Image (cartoon, rainbow, N blue to C red; front, top):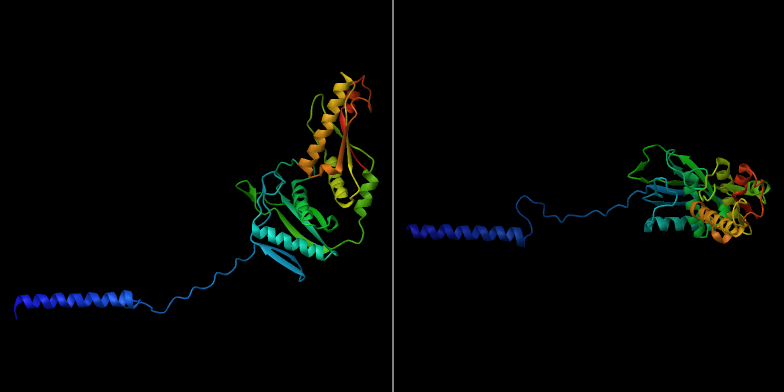
Amino acid sequence: MSKSIWWWIFLLSGVCALLAFICCKVLCGATSGEDTTKAVVAPVAKAVSVWNVRDGAAFTDGVDEHWRFGTSKFSHMTPLSADMTTSMAATATYLKGHPDRSLTITGYYQEDETNNSILPNLGLARANDINKYMRGLGVPAKQLNNAARIVGANSIKAGVLAKGAEFSFDALASGDDRLAAIKSRLFGKPITLYFGTNQDNISLSAQQRTDFADLIYYLDNVSTSKLEISGHTDGTGNRDSNVALSQSRAKFVDDYLSRNGGINTSRTSTIGHGPDKPIGSNSTNDGRAKNRRVEVTLR
């Protein structure tokens, strides 16, 4: 047999082998040694909730995140995710449908954070922020309570407290002794804030922060209550200028309570008395210092 015939036989064999490979790989869908069974893709399981909101067997809901707050901030980070919004709406619906249940919101905070709120600590301020959110969903104030808890130093990462609060449920108290105690202690009795000459800064004592926490609670639960904010000056200088200054101070405190305590300005009124209602002698430094004040009074 000639060499040319062998060459054609060899070429034809190669072509046949190539065609067989292509048929097996492309048309038949598998190569030698491969499993020809079609792979079954398992459904993706829903992630286990990071945060369970639960009232025993009566109600349970969950979301894969928490309320988040920036370092030393008491307003929650926004926007809330769709899952968080849905979960909070479900919680609100449950509470509105079960008026015999109450929800305690425990706000978390670290001791070394700066508290710029009017409340005793950032935990209470954060709980109050969430409390306002839940009331915005229609939950009655009497079903909401605020609490606070200190968390470890490693809880804040990259400037964010990622787990800012927890919820717990309980039976609604039959009476509210706290409201009666607040009214007895604070109704008609001013909380006095002092200012330096030509100064607008406010420094709150621990007792005043407790007082403001009580005022917020009272305002939330007694719809007819209001705060009267009155500004005063010493007798130094022009009276008209002092009246304007006292009005400015009253407005400053009104804005401060709204910004740092969440008190709605529709529940407050402001007035400036200038030097007309002194509580100390304008002839002494101590007396003048007492007269430079703003009084916040529950009415």
